[in-house]
Image 1: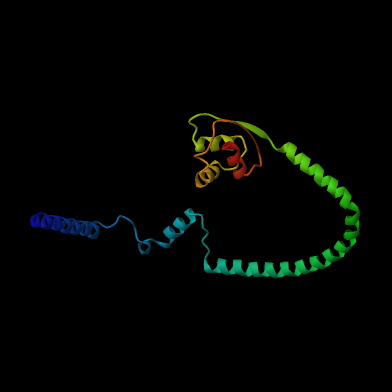
Image 2: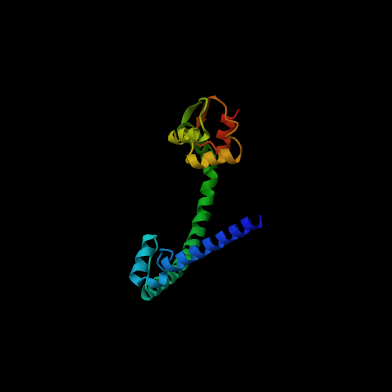
Length: 183
């Protein structure tokens, strides 16, 4: 027993020394940032989608932003004063239009309901929740199949999906769709 433990320890020690020697002599294969030229670093940063500005460009950009915000604040104060005057004039007109606005909002709601498209989802035996999510995304019932599938899994709906046909419409929330297909 003692002999096998010693042999195992010697094996681990030898493997550690070999790995350390390999890293020391052959390196990790990657270049260090200190070894790269400035142009190469700029290229790497720009490839990642960032912008590189020199000191003068940075100062010009920051000074330009401050002057824009100062002029924007002055303009917003002037606009607020003119809006106050306009608001007083329109309040009377709005009181008269409230009744017509209610009718308009009812019409808009009816139009939105008409714009909602419906889809008859047929769930067959053996369909995975990811397949169902893909079908729903392809028919514009949901926006993102991955997000919906994750919702099903996180809330344990993926285990409760029932075989059958379901009438679904655009604009339904994940909860509404999940409840519909698990009844």
